[in-house]
Amino acid sequence: MKLGANTVLFGGHDMETAFKYIAMAGYDGVEVSALTGMSDHLDVTRWREQADTVKDLAAKYELEILAMELGRLDRDILELAFQAANAIGCPVVNCGPGGKSDDEESFLQQMEIMNDRARLAEQYGVTLCVKAHVHACVWNTPTTLRMIESVQSPFFGVDMDPSHLWRAGEQAADSVAAVIDHIKHIHIRDCPGEMGALGRPGKPEEQANGRGSVDLVRYIAALHEGGYEGPVDLEVIGAKEYSVEQCCIIAAEARGHMQACLQACGAR
Amino acid sequence: MKLGANSVLFGGYDTETAFKYLAMAGYDGIEISAIPGMSEHLVIERWQEAAPEIKRLSAEYGLELLAMEQPFPDPAIMEPAYQAAVEMGIPVINTGSRGTADDEESFQERVGVLAELADMAERYGVTLCVKAHVGAAIHDTATTLRAMEMITSPAFGIDMDPSHIHRAFEDPHEAIVPVFSRVRHVHIRDCKGRTMGEGILDESGNVRYPSMAPEMQTCGRGDIDLVRFVAVLHELGYQGALNLEIIGAKEYSLEQCCIIAAESRGHIQACLQACGAR
Image 1 (cartoon, rainbow over the protein chains, first blue to last red):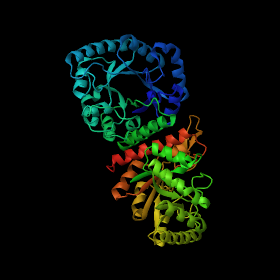
Image 2: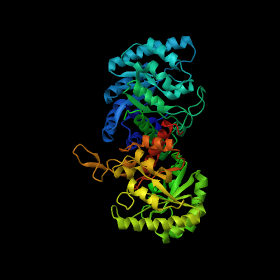
Image 3: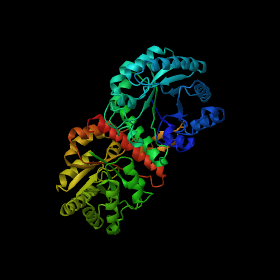
Image 4: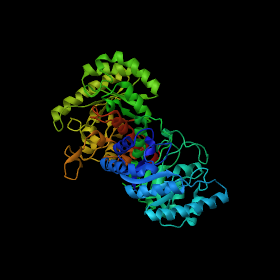
């Protein structure tokens, strides 16, 4: 597995700051945030101006570009993201599923959209990954399995995020086996509180791996046992106002935790 | 186990900076550095001035004062260190044996001094801990066991440091077992290689990070099986302090120090979770 971090953690700072400290924390790679409002790192509407900068930073800090996160499935924006990903050598673009939980019409509508976007991804040779997300049409393992059945493209995959599954009432380690063949990306973070409480993800420091309630030791072991070898990108939301030192601490603490998890299960 | 870090990691910064960022990194406590030349957090000659501020910082940042490191096993320096510890409620003072490895005369002389210091610690109600240290009179498990036998005071304990045991060509998760009965403190860090010449090499074969560069001491970055070491500590029932001790970062940026502290805490936290200790 390759460990990376989404630059959105450093959303209040410029892109080079994110690359610099993610590298210093020992990550293998980076997920470039194109989440407007949460960061100003990659604006896909201006990707041609920014592509060289992203590639230069990746080379300078020796970070592999593991993924990009856009968040939205809007066709025009997503096509720009796929173009940008193709240009910077980014293999995966992560999006949320959109729609509403427990609403069949919404689910079917989103599946139609995902099928179209997967075909679009194929044109650019990148993989679109979607995760179960609290309150969205795909929000737990049963709906993830339905999504896998509905969107059958080699350019489509599951982005498995244990923090959203925890909030949906699942211990992610127990859900890995059901979806492992379709996982092409992992978003990782911890989550405080009770399992199944569909509330907020916690303060950024509470999302640092090891601080919350998710059994990430067993989750990473399950991924390793399942043969997963792709990217595992830390995604911490809400730290835009945090100091560089606070962001560094969250990034480093999470990487240290993941490193020990990998060592404990024999993956490193 | 209580997780702490020695403030010497932030040796280029003031005491409050060390407290602030160690608390932010999630540590339970702190080991106060009284190591001259590496930090000015506690200058033993002026401990009466520093003690109230250290107690205030401990309360403000919610960090328990787990230990103090005062490296000189010299009665004239150690007595005020004990007085400072008593005043601040610090239970453990860590020191080194000094002396020379594989020199019987030096060993006997050093153990004699440590026995005297242990008796003094007993009078002050604190515990003096000594670790096996590369190049010193006590430098491996065999010399640690001899010291344990010769120093009978209950105020004498072993400070187990896997990075020094690793460099004595021993496996720390095995070496902890015979000395465990007297372990009263654990210093923890990682280590790349077993000799000074090792480390991370670049493509040309040049040393990019020396084996003991501060970042290579970060838990999880080196060669020591800390997952097993922490698991064995847990199996043996250790419930004392586990303090990260990173040497050499005095010139490092604040961000670098924060990263080393946080990455290590995340690693140890996962080690504890993996063995069921948390």
